[in-house]
Image 1 (tube, rainbow, N blue to C red):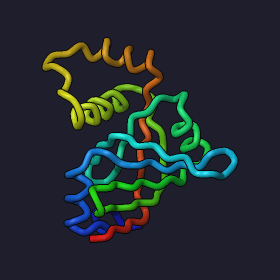
Image 2: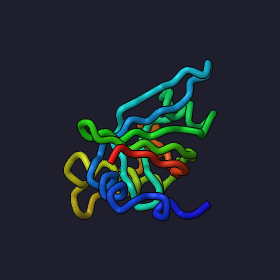
Image 3: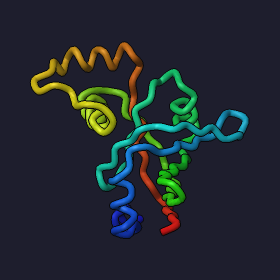
Length: 140
């Protein structure tokens, strides 16, 4: 498969980067849909979502990694279908969660204790869904 940046138009890339909320769609055990409004981070290739490992969205994505993402902005939207994988351990998990957090609230203070922060993420059962888009649709 070609890289996702080859699939996305410049307008679509800008749309993903300029928004911060998406709707995550996963499949429940019984096959019915589960949707959740979540914050995300986009690195130009992958979309990352911070969740806790006790939530349905995590359990669903681990069980069936075929997921969908909808990024809405008024009547404009971008829909992506692809594959989820999990990131459960520091330092990658911690760095990604720090980036996601900075998109919707003040960033962590300069010189924060990374070990203490990592421990708090462990205690909260924080993990990351790493989404690899394979198909993209928008109503540009």
